[in-house]
Structure formats: C-alpha cells, structure tokens
Image 1 (cartoon, rainbow, N blue to C red):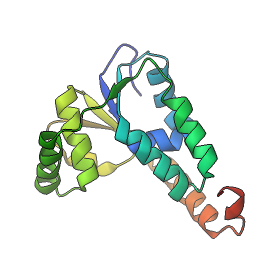
Image 2: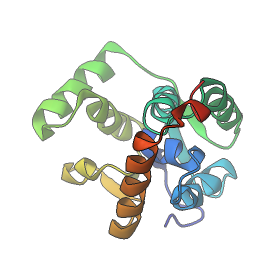
Image 3: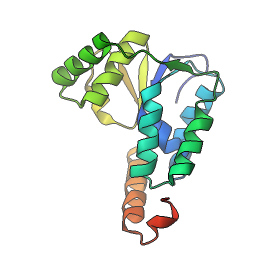
Length: 168
C-alpha cells in the first residue's frame, strides 16, 4: 500500500483500468487510485496511460465505449495528479532501449523511461515484468489470490453470451 505523503508513484495502465472496470478485485486497485486522486500521495500519470486504460476497459473488460470514455474523462479531471505529457524523440528512443535491455514490450519500456525522467520512486502496476527493472521498484497491487479471482472473472466474461450488454 502507498503511504500518505509518499512517492512520487508512476501509475501504469493496469491499475487505472482495473479500478474502473467493476471486477471483483477492482476495490484493490481503487485503494491505490483514490489516494492519487485525493492528493494523499504524489501520483504521476502519463496521458498515454489513460488512452491505454480505455483500450483495456474496452478490449479486456468489455465495457461499452461510452462507459469507458466517460470513466476516463472523469478520471482526467483530477487536479491532484501530475499529468505527464512529454513524449519526445529521446524518450521514445530510450523506451526502446529499455525494451531491449530488459526484454519487455515497448509500452513497458516507455513506462520505465518515464519513471526515470519523472523521478518516480515506484511504478504502480499489475505487471510482474516491471520487477526485472534495476532502476525502479514495482509496486504490484494484486495478491496471488486476487490474480486468480481476476483471471476467473475474465474467463467468465469472455465466455458469456451477453457480451453485448457490456459492449456498445
């Protein structure tokens, strides 16, 4: 858990999407997102993370486009979050260097680079691959049991005949 007054913490796509997805473990993600929104911890969120969260809400959690858009529009209204908006050639190039060095996806390399650029003390994530980074700590938000519950939930919604009720 994040300590009040601590950070800065870089928020990855996963916790943002999970907090807004309405899953059986979304409350765990909300326990990290709420203090960021309320300014209790110093939170850094790159704008691309919000677009990525929208993509995950649609493609993984099968939320309706309107619902996902409204959730993300409400989220970006937070004035207590530091919205990281830099995306230069150097940041992009260094992202791919991290991707190569740590054998991670380019997207994860971008977050590793932003963590370095922004001085983040940790990346708040659901992605265990961030544990392999030397220069930044991964704050994994889900326990093993919560991961199992989430995976079962995802299997259930993928198999459901009523995806249309969540999809627009």
